[in-house]
Length: 497
Image (cartoon, rainbow, N blue to C red; front, side):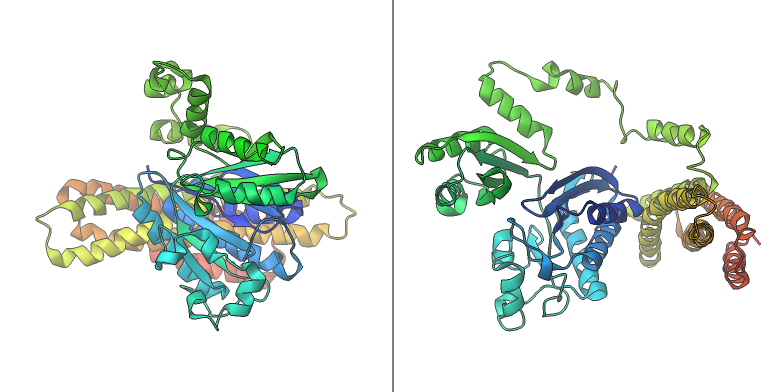
């Protein structure tokens, strides 16, 4: 299973409504949200989510777009360095993907943000095109205000994508690929910023301190404390235990101590396990055998999202319960995703054959790419169909004397009809790709191609049912006619009319 983690950092840590909108943007693309960490002093949010590569690519774009729409950096002040509304977007390999794959995702996202949002994009870390941009601190040097003065004048600040000028309110964004890191904050029992500055400098690698450690002093004004905010870019080289011990030693030089610590966002299990092993000074300890959860996973007792058998059962159970969502529209999208997946498998197996006619490779590769893109789209459409119905039900639940109720109900019905229509249109496009690829595929996968086509037809037909049931409640005749025309054209393209 191909799985990527993304950790967009955006410049909003105080307005919960804005944070919710940005998180919803990621969810709307089908991403699975893992964590949302906000900090009022930093005025920053760290959002963590996972998904298939294509899903994460779309989710990150939607996060960038929404952030640019609702965050104004000219009015933003916080302790954490920042240069953008969405400040940094890293892609991190989790399962079935490499760091090189993540670098390609970073390039694709950077190009799209630059082109569609007119925001300058800098590639960093493992996606960097310039050696000096591997370090995020170099990319973000000067922050929004400093970059605003230099971009377009200083060649070294020319972005990799987008305009060679700052976005007036959204600034710029760093997009990259990296391995797992640990964001580890150490809070001192002192408010002495001069001491904090000295400790941070002597702790970080660039100041001659610990390797693979970045560090900066942060003033926690409300708590009258100094925080040493660190990033462990390689926690196996410099562990949390080592960082804690060194910070404590340096703090003692200023008659201070580390009072508490914080972990921001997610961290790998191994990083915390290493801390425990070092702290306890364990001998002859085998975590694979002696940690209960590890052992249960090893024998398959826990299963998990990566187990397709359990995933299939979970979908069936979700559809079978008496909740209104997920319903037929989501089921149609799931069928579409399954059809795309089967088509991808058949095309992929054929492309692996050394005996394949070279003339067949380009069209099969094109079909493979199209089906991958649409499979990700179906994941998002399954979520959107459920969200659309929930929005309509929310409008229905408003008091009948609420003057906004009729308009909100009509908007909900239009959304509830538009979502399955988009599913039907995606099914038609995917079906065309399967039909183009089927004659080129090997005989061994012919049945899989046929099954893919049947699933995609079913997706289109099921989606159509959900469009039609909502048309009856829409009062605007021109909207109804437009939806009907588009639906009929889509079904005709599928051969389902």
